[in-house]
Image 1 (cartoon, helix red, strand yellow):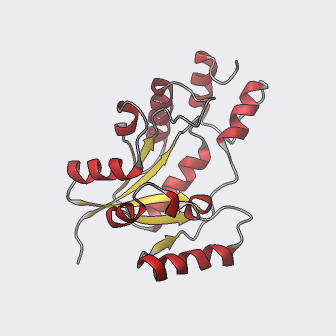
Image 2 (cartoon, one colour):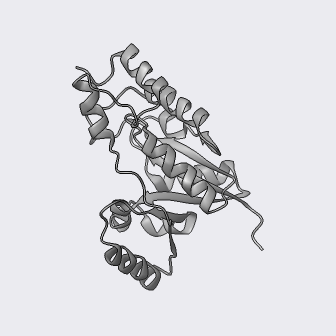
Length: 202
């Protein structure tokens, strides 16, 4: 019996962190009996322009973690210079927490991109995956991809039973830029912080 702590990882730019992130993290935490879920904000990826400073995203993620059940903040990627690949982060996490087994939480869009990740076979070796379906997904296509992963790489992808909410950070940023309400999309304290720091309005 594997007695290692089961730790979830929810990575992303969190630009900004919204209630969809919170709901996904809590749902996976409960369904799969994880000891905790780490929120893992990216540093400054080169392919993203309209991104809030690292310090701001760290603070907003901290608020989300405080509001949730079973969540913790991991700032490893924020603290690194340059672009960080998932394989490097997983290696560092295993070194820091050798007693843990990791469950990387992904959406179905990412499921179809996994084989394009840097050193994806090593990533498969270092983590389990939990795929959270999205509203409107073609379920049979998702199941077929999971079967293909099992056949081609002997990699089991766990499929969460609950679908993630239909919320995107892009939509949230657009609403903020227009001065519209984000009720039901952001924690009130996150919206207050965004307004105070004048994020996403220029």
